[in-house]
Image (tube, rainbow, N blue to C red):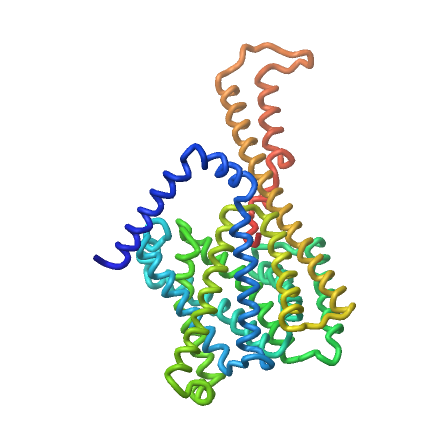
Length: 415
């Protein structure tokens, strides 16, 4: 029996037995309480833990003052290869639930048009981030990387899916001032190359969210799960990262001192797979929150996750922050919160305009139906008969002030 079939059978049996246990009277009331009050807690806790562990892992493995692995891009390519293998196996085991059938049915031109640009910006973001961690502290890295909303706004404007408003400009200004204070607070410990690498990663991160959402939302129907998305993007992320590693790092020259025995080779492979497992678990927890929770939960969780990363950087690696660093970080996170609140409010306004527009169209149809049925020729106190009154109502309902703004129909793809 093929391995995917065995895995599917085992999971179906576990699901059946778990469902029968949870539906028993003694357990059902606790299940209801959990669903009402704690449904997001495990995924949020997993997101926090795996994200912080992955950041600490990257800093420990790649940092010059720690393990100092000489080929961070090569190890990152192994992470991407592991993600593709996981996505391929699981999506084939559950093709309908996880979208494996959608990916298999894609034509090569469609697959390449999505996979190549998305993979390039994503691998660039991750690659430059890991290179930055070689030189700068994890706390400084987190603060600089938090400037990504600036580049999300700029890239969205360049692609024509976002309009620059005064509120967005204010958010960009606040985050920029916070970043400036963060850089000034580094003092003599400031590493220009590390900062540049992290800033490039922030630019690519902003472009990544825009390009990935544009490409994926152009699919009809959309991909069913993040595992299907991982299956589409990971192969070219692996290929592009591996090629960059060969050009820049030349691993065949650097790994000789590291891998001098079979035991060492297995240890390096295990170290690579550990990072891949952490990345996969973090992505799955994050996807669950995106699918099940709301924007407020994600906004609060994202800021708390970055604060926890800084805290662990201080506790584990001894990162030092002065008053200027701390004030700059507070300003940056304040700007990020304002940005996410403004995007959430805009999303609600767009949804309200869409509902108002649909209600207006329904009212129009009803009024026009009354007009078509004819009138009895009576007049009101102003000397207007039924036909005149109905015609005025139709004109009023079709006026721009009542139909809602057409610009409100454009979808915000960034929240």
